[in-house]
Length: 139
Image: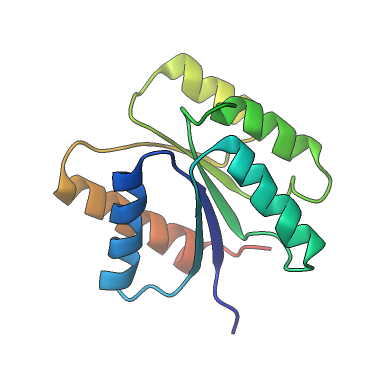
């Protein structure tokens, strides 16, 4: 069985660390890749394609990525025939209804507001894992 492949664009070092540690502590096996900017993100996808490594099973995007934000990245992903099938989850520290609507309109699969506490963060990550890797079938 292949491990699920997750590509996460998260500019915040602490949030990348929290995610990595959570996966390790809960012994959730995944092929987890982190990028810190939209340019790194697209380079990763291009390099994976060139190496014949395939595409990630799931993409996590921080809404406030730079230089392109998640909405611009989402537009690009959904316009690419090789990438448009990948579920994209948007992560944001704010809950702006207009922003959420825009992301869903552009093809986001989910929008998750980042919690303020460690306990809530752990609860959301666990719910995320159960949903995406135990409930749904990824292509």
